[in-house]
Image 1 (cartoon, protein in one colour):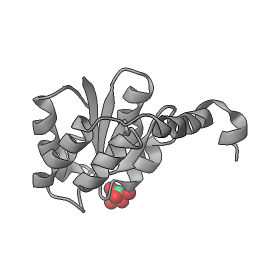
Image 2: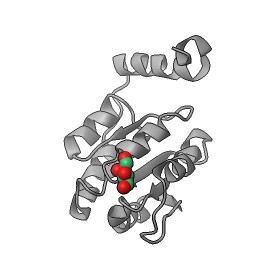
Image 3: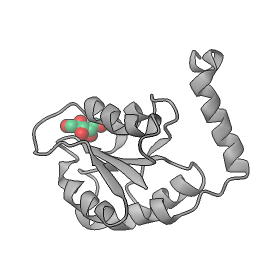
Length: 151
Ligand code: RB5
């Protein structure tokens, strides 16, 4: 499994915990940032999520202050299903119902100690398929049908 990882300065506080967890379970593509340098979250979200959109990575972990900014940006890219999961239950449901391929965490919302539980829930929970796949098919249609994406 290949997972890209990216954070802005507000998500940087979670970066070590995320990398520590993922390095034992996946091949990681590290998109930075590498210090607490200020960076606009759209830049890092596009960089990280593009790996999934292009098929070069299976999943992506993005971090900003809340997870909201990076999720908004990532969801603009084709094939991306990004969601903010700052607790275990949301991470489980985000995978089982929404099959999230990008998880977004908030460095101003959660602490590093919570990261492994949230990422485990996301990675280890299976997608349920069935009626949820039908709904995801409708989301995917927006990637290719101008009449939907133009609304
Ligand atoms: C940066 O200050 C902050 O606005 C950003 O990390 C994020 O929380 C935006 O959604």
